[in-house]
Image (cartoon, rainbow, N blue to C red; front, side):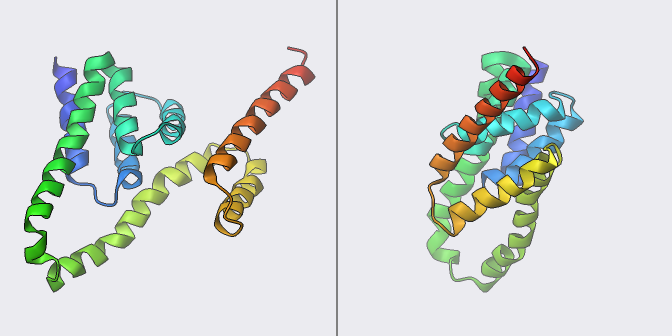
Length: 179
């Protein structure tokens, strides 16, 4: 029972103190999961890839995956509720009070001040993920990013092509090694 409560509290804190959406939460989730030794770094990165590929917000997906890994279905539910409740309450309060403070210069200044921190929180898991990759993948990353950004290719097609390329690479390597 204690671990369920720990999962809920951990993800509740992350939900309360994270601005900038799911990607900004990833760094905090990774730090907490590592600190509590619930999941290893490599397994977390695999979960991150899976969470990104699954439909839905990435932070919710990761919360569910971590909770499930730690305590099964109950752990997934505890983590999910922990990460969702703060956002739900905050959005509800903002929706009720939005008209009163949307033109407040202090609120506007606070949000502008948080932007660089949000960008940093998004970059942290990205850097961790890139460090785990082989250097030959870097040109592929740049090529895919430019294809999506400049050529406006669909990210879904790029993900599909990357998955097919990974499967082909595994097949080719295993055939070459005679496995």
